[in-house]
Every structure is written in structure tokens, then in C-alpha cells.
Image (cartoon, rainbow, N blue to C red):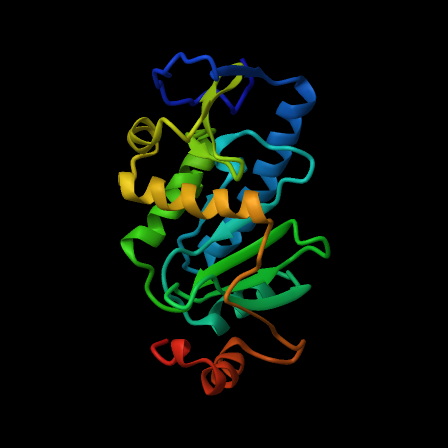
Length: 241
């Protein structure tokens, strides 16, 4: 057993020709432990400031690789300046700040990168997330700080549309396409959410990353409030924020 990595939900997997068991090496377990320690440290600083963050993606699932990023999300609206003040008081200096709106109808989100390579970032929505948008995080796998410290790992889907089911030896893999209903039950989201993510990620795989509707990189001295005022003048879809 790997200390701190033993709290794994019990899920029965559909045994298909595409099913695969993946056994982790000690190096991979050590990488997961390190990324989780770094995530815990960052989340604890946000919690100390009164926020309730989650960690999203491979760190929550466990299927990390050397290029895995730490993706910390505050999944509700906050005052951007309070997040920035929290980071300043925690001696964390942003390397980049930007606003992203994936589509004209998507909720715009603020991103603060804390690593020159973009491997450590904090994000939060600039208006309330819709239930479907919150399910996108569940689809990929998410954990709160308490479960992260407990060593919990959760099932979720990676960017290659592979369902990852954590196991004590590593994880099991199953493709999402063709098993959408099963995936929805495992990751606990609506079937429509799974189908939407399949469509979006398949399109990216076929045509490459075509970008997002809007990405605005803030100047070093620019606040998120100032950036929003600038964007609202040219993007009518942001006027509801």
C-alpha cells in the first residue's frame, strides 16, 4: 500500500476489450505525493483567507505525469481583489493573470498563474457558474482540501476522453465514447454533460485547439476589475457580469 494514497472509492468497471489496468511505478507515486503536497499547501493558504477551493483534474484522479499542472479552483464568485490580497499576504507572486471566456454564452473566468511554465494556477468564475458548468469539474474529477489531505482519489475523465478509475495499484482505464451512460453514473453527472464534453473534446482532437472565444491577458499593473471594464466596452457578452 502507498501511504496517503489508499482511500480509493470502490467502483466496478465494465470489462471490455478496451479496458486497461495501469500499475504505477514508485516514481509515479512519488510524483503524485509531491503534487498533492504542493496543492495542499496552496489550498491551505486560500482556506486561511476564508475561501473554499477545490483541486481539479489529474491530481484529484491520481493519473499524474511530469507535465501535470496544479489546477486550483474557487468554484463560486468572489471579489478578485480579495484573492489577489490573499496571495500577496501568502508571499505568492503571480507570473500572469488573464480572463477567459470559452464561448459567448460561457461564464468568464479569472486565472492567476503562479508558475512561469503555467503549471500552478488558481481560477474562479466572474459570475455564478451554471449547474452544467460545475459538472464539468466533476467530469474531470475534483477534491476539496479535506479529502485531499485524507488521500482520497476520485474517478474522472482526462482530456483524451479516457475514464480514469483509481485503484490501489494505480488506475483502470475505459474509453468514454460508447460508454457515456456508464461514465455519467461513475462520475455522477448528467448524461447530457458527458455528451457535451465528448463533443467539445472530440472536436479539439480532430481539428486541434482552435482557441477560446475570449482570452485577455492583464497588464502587470492591471486589476481584474479594470480589465473587465475594458472588455465590457468591446464585448457585449460580458455586460451581464
